[in-house]
Length: 213
Image 1 (cartoon, rainbow, N blue to C red):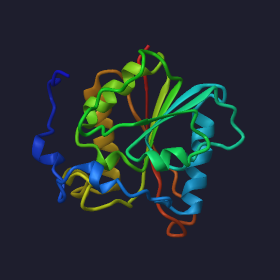
Image 2 (image 1 turned 135 degrees about the horizontal axis):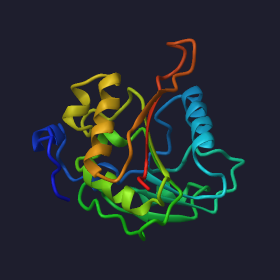
Image 3 (image 1 turned 180 degrees about the horizontal axis):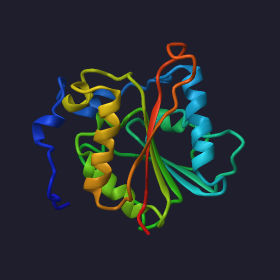
Image 4 (image 1 turned 90 degrees about the vertical axis):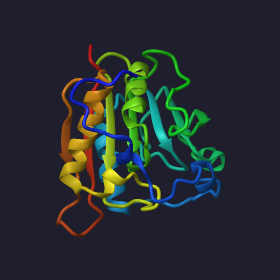
């Protein structure tokens, strides 16, 4: 992908404390959730509002649970993640792909294949985020939403350094920058989905970009 003018990102921003191959780190299945139940419920409700209930959905950085509404009748849910056992344990998925996006950000899907895409509390691990976002844009239908949710939780050895050097508000700006650099999305929108009262659950935020028409 060509580098648009005004790109402030540098290779050092995407270094990690642990630069060993990611497939080694994720080789052991982790059948746990990374945010608490109230934050999960907030994410699920938001996804229910944003994604068409009969659409084809792409779940990137997927695992054994997708946090999509259980009563939705999606035409398909494609999960792309790092661990086959985790993906196999996810009953929502209709298609499962194991791929390390930090090694190969090219998605094995057709142009305009999906009605929506999501990354749930995992964007901080992407070392080639603008490239991945550009690929998501290619695979989305015109106008389709790309939702990125995040919290303050992470594996600190694997999260990129730029993510760990900034706070929650700046994380929204960083994701917005990824969307802009992808050159496939309209203006991004940021949401605070944190359950209230503040401090009663894990914080949760979302950034949404729609595929340009």
